[in-house]
Amino acid sequence: MSVWSLDARWRGDSPSSLDDASVAPAVSSRRAFLLCVAALAIPVAGGVVAYIYQLTQGLSVTGLNDEVFWGVYTVDLVTFIGFSYGGALVSAILRLTNASWRGPISRIAEATAVVTLIIGALFPIIHIGRPERLWEMFVRPQINSPQLWDMVAIGTYLLATLVLFSLPLIPDLARLREGNGIGGWRARLYRWGSFGWRGTEVQRRTLNRALTIVAIAIVPLAIMVHTVLSYAFSLTSRPGWHSTIFGPYFVIAAVYSGIAIVILASVAYRRVYRLEKWIDERSIRFLAYLMVAMGVAYAYFTFTEVTTAGYVGGREEAPVLYGLMLDRYAPLFWGFVVMGLVVPVLLVAFRKTRTIAGITIAAGLVVGAMWLKRFLIIVPTLAPSLLGDSYGSYTPSWVELMVTVGAAAAIPLLLVLLFRVVPVLSADEIEELNDQVRS
Image 1 (spheres, one colour):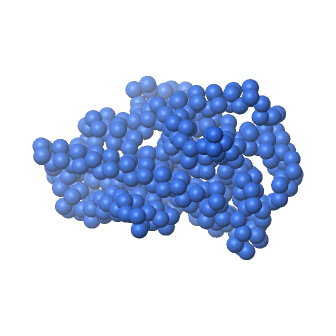
Image 2 (image 1 turned 90 degrees about the vertical axis):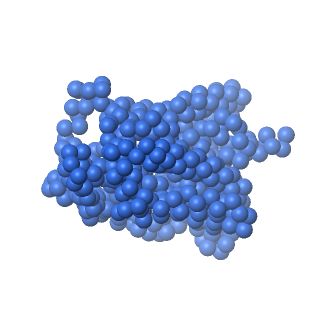
Image 3 (image 1 turned 90 degrees about the horizontal axis):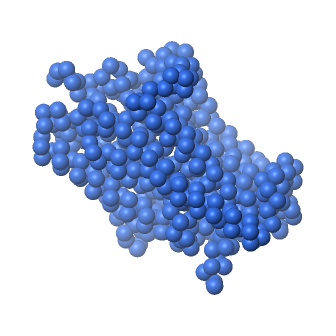
């Protein structure tokens, strides 16, 4: 196999083989790789510094207060874990249905699920004022606490996601053990990580059975994680939160935004490393169809939530709904409706805009709009006081914003580092699916 280098990419060349394409990020220019890592590490370092400042000064440096005690950190927690759920569920369901077009995007979807879950799981720690007391959740757990349920669900889901990501790597690492032009520690890692894979019928049958079991298990696990996350809201008596639809509402939102982040990651690697031949437009287009289906479902849930609360017009819910739709939060809410629900659907619906560029814009709008929607779920509900007619306010501080930007930059940074080591494409799976189509 000839190693495809970044110099060839600058000339406009594409990887000459599937094996070359799968390791394109690993063999690209060291200088370009270091520049990319440095550019992403700067905001990550800024987020770390901001958190250290918060750790020494206390939560008073945030915009949180007695009325609005959850803010941007909780928004980030729900959003990033939602990204993970969408990536894992796409990979698992497409594997179970044996979708022939899943091969080029499966590795990216699984890697995105792992990375975003790790980042999202940090926010409960970031949000608490005394993280050194976190160990008490393990030695003195409160079984009736939704926070404990979250910890158990996220931990179990992380383990399943790591297994789903790792198992398909075995045959790919075996393909790269010899003759790939990669030496040193990565060559040793490939030999160790392939576990003596020879591609025998027994090995393939065992691997496929294990992947099927994990894919089946990860679907209810993912639903459980985001349903339990919604319980932190819906199991309270707060107006706007105490709702029976919050479980499926959160699940659909997670899939919607998760598919969007997978599209963005796939398009980025497709473009940067000239992988158009391998990550074809059909795979991106089918992902867009799934994203739009989830967007329509989420629009239905949003309509149901607003109309039921508005029709009854209860004393507690009326101020929340009025502030959301007609008062201080109205520009944000209607901006979410237009940019997060209407425009992405229209971009994918029409042939002229159903291009890679149009789909990328739609996915980018979904990611931003769904972060905004989580903000609108949390802050407007907490702002009205339960003890009178007062109305609290919340403005994120520079500390919260820097931590959020750092966490967002950490996602592509971890993906860049990860795919510098492991193949970005599941070459063995792509060839197996191609053989099935030809037969």
